[in-house]
Length: 157
Image 1 (cartoon, rainbow, N blue to C red):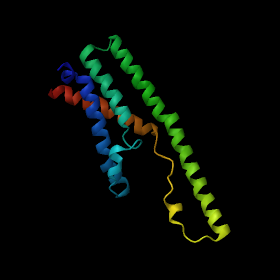
Image 2 (cartoon, rainbow, N blue to C red):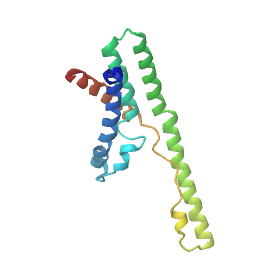
Image 3 (cartoon, rainbow, N blue to C red):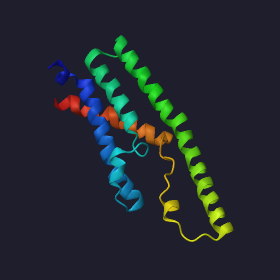
Image 4 (cartoon, rainbow, N blue to C red):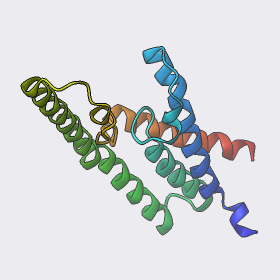
């Protein structure tokens, strides 16, 4: 039953779900298309990873104080997670864009060179996932989401 009373844990979980859900209307505003796959995808605005780790750190700070060792651990974890979201994961996503274009161009060249008829198998190929990481603004708003949602939850619970 102690698990059910772990405020930082539940604040983090709530931040993940909230950030994932809010991606759908944000994407709709930007593109006028509803994309429900955003509920379970990585990348996009806001960063649910950033929301989760900042919610965790904010919850720990509220429960144990900012001078506690566990807050230091959670804050460092948040910093590393958000840095990774804008660094390695974002670069991998940008490389995936280039690789997908190379594969697309390669298939088009082969098709043109041999004058192939349309091949349904070619259209069904899997592409590399391009939306892996986050732009710095997405990480910022993900972090802000986590902090604000946790403060709101703490004030009502």
